[in-house]
Length: 400
Image (tube, rainbow, N blue to C red; front, top):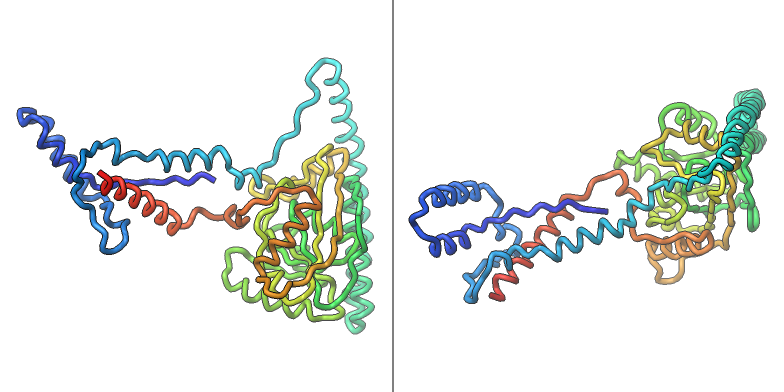
């Protein structure tokens, strides 16, 4: 992540010393220096960025302007951030390497395009449409007519939600292999998983009807959230609303205490990552005082990249990309439940669970907060960088 740093300091005392050493016959140069000094009055002074009580003493040694303006450490840091930008790489989709590079393979590639778009895609649309017809014709009567029989209604709704998720996976020709025991409904437990796309929820939901905590989305996805998924006990939030955090935290605590509630699924990264890395886990899921069950998800990109970049692509286009590919290949591991150890903080607990998921799925850990994807660098962070640079300049002045 590259940061743009801007430093402008008043160098009027140094200019005055240099002016004494210059010939006074150059009137034009004197006028330019005077004009430049007047402009410098509007610039922030270096002492504004220094600790209180500090001042710039007149240097005793020989001082050169290039010594004062040596910003090589800052440039080195900036260049390192550009070369080793591990933050941006977490949210970058790597395009597949082209293989139709000669006259022998190109006809085969064209044939594959015709098969995928003219045969597989229409068949998959038909399968998904049939699934929605079956689901809606069953879910609506069950939801409306069995309101007085909550136990039976919740059981049937779970089965129907698992069914429609199975139709979604079939529409991608999903090849999903599950490892480990299937999740069960138990109180005081929460499931956490790494997050690559919204289809993570669909792949996990076809095996077990989870109640998920998820960002509120617009469009037809938001309609499904507020109707069908709402009945599963799912919890929605908005990143821009500060009050939502307190409300969501209370709903999480209430949900994990219910013995008959659907298992709670949380994606603690808070954003979609490209399935090569894992970013920092939010601590909310790890301070509920309950058992945490890790889930590791790893996609094979042999046919399609399942990463969803929500800034560049709508979820509808993401689904179309999956439905026009050959298949979505995925492995899911249900890992050993974890408990908070004595003396362990929720942040340390979150990092330990992230280690377990990263090792199992073969993902690289990076020390970044995924929410930085949606915001600009903090002004306080820029001010700390500016103060650090000012202190380095002061140190050079004192050494001379």
